[in-house]
Image (cartoon, rainbow, N blue to C red; front, side, top):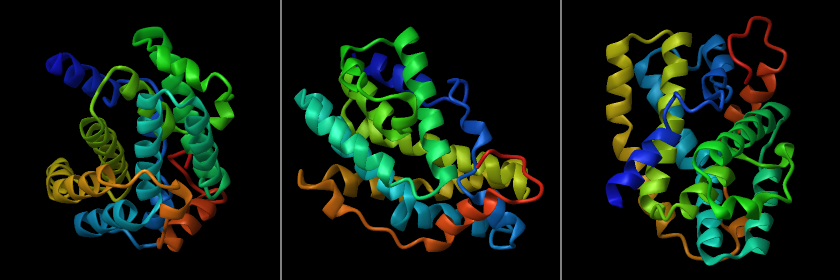
Length: 230
């Protein structure tokens, strides 16, 4: 069972899973153009800030509460957190990034890895379902433990940003792998903190201190030359 769970999780978080993750940069494209991300170190710092204090941290918190609600069979709580997740997407492009991947993930999961828990999300239209909510619901439905599911999810998010940086900065293949290696401790620390988060109101647990990254997402909407959708 453990081997199956790991294999499934790796498959769902793989770049080959057709959710269009490769077309999103979470504002990184603008940060590169503006000169804030210029090499491997600044790439690592940008991603670390997002995990420790930014949009990724918010998504991890959403993931935890959705996974727990799904395990408990609490549809009302799951939908309430999903509504909060949508409200936390602070710009048009963040909303596009979150919901486009969420809808695609649910669609392919229904076809290839069906779980009864996905029906708990039926009340949500594609434009209302964020990626973190969809992944949390599916992993819980397949009895994948929270910390393992959260690690897989965060690794995929980080890997996608590093891949974007390789195309944008650009970074070489070696620097890309060094960045992934160097970010491992940040990933593990964030997972440990989130997994220990008490079951209180997720809104009261939220906090963000990466205003420039949010502004970068907004500025990207009118960036003259773009490789990415966000």
